[in-house]
Length: 112
Image (tube, helix red, strand yellow):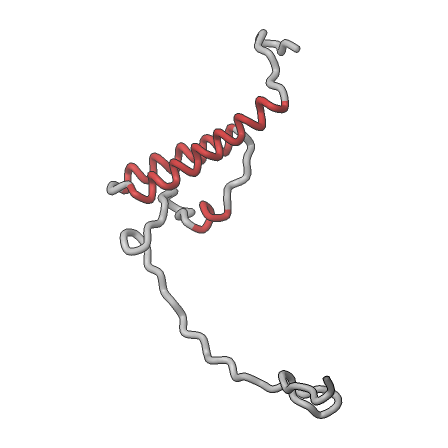
C-alpha cells in the first residue's frame, strides 16, 4: 500500500528487523561512548542514541537511563566523570527457626 508521499508502508517483519537493527546500533553507540576519551565525543554518541530512540518511538533501556547524566547528556564513566560510592551494610544476624514439635531445622529424624 502506498502512502501520500508515494513510498510503501513497511510490513511488520520490516519494522521488527529495523527495530532490532536500531537496538544493536544503540548498544554499539553506548559501548563506544563508554570507551571514548573525549567528553564531547561521548555527548555526540548520546545525542545519536536519543535521536534513534525518538525516531523509532522506542523506550530508553534501563542501563542507559542509569548510566547517563540527565543534565549534560553524557555517558557516565566511573572514575572519569562520576564517582561510585559503596555503602556498608550492617551484618544480619542469623536466627534459628524451631518447628512446632520442638526440633530445630536441619536436625535428622530418627525414623527411617
